[in-house]
Length: 315
Image (cartoon, rainbow, N blue to C red; front, side):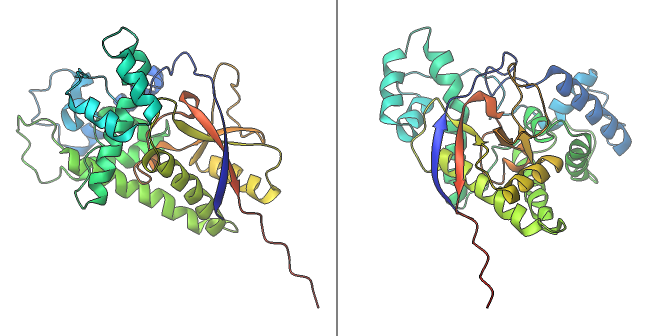
């Protein structure tokens, strides 16, 4: 399958998901923190960590903050690195609008908060292509996001992270306990594993792998191969024109937790609908070097695949 054209349409933004750097669910975040504490206690690494007195700080002490997703103090002065990245990677229209709004109350909500994560990721991706090991996919918020609100996936992530700590000295004042490079290396490995396992699905493994690869590669290209804007593509849309075979692939991807229907105030049904919008599981984000944003936070793109080959005539 290959991608050969797209048609764009805007998507609404739910009240609980105004920006990608905000928690996508307070309940999910609380559950993920509690689960981490339990896995940490079971690992035996916590025995001598008496200097961490607040259980809510455990996951930050081990993983730190996420450069990609967490709020931060940002320098957007004319000579700052952020503005240099914006001028380097953004469209002419976005640069012009940023320069016009710089210094006004509108700049942070309309430019900085919408584009900062994408700029950092674009910079990291270029370094990755240049042979430098990436460290952008790290931090407590990011690991929780990559769990996709799936307990088994969260446990798999936590176990992989805590496994690295075995054999290390327990008394340490260094924070975070796991370096950003170690975390990025682990989550990229888990991302690869989640995609590769798809190929073993009975009857549709190869097709499903190709389908997800086309979607993932498309998301990567929209972020890394074209000028950035503040209105980023975060999901794909499908309609009744989709073939029965490809609709089956969408359903299977949803069942496996690798594709999610976008849910918002106007659409609360989390079951796959033949006409709707979908975003890739966050666990796949690091493999495709994409932002970990829910699809309702930006635009969707209608992905048109090459037509399925017609059956050969007999005789």
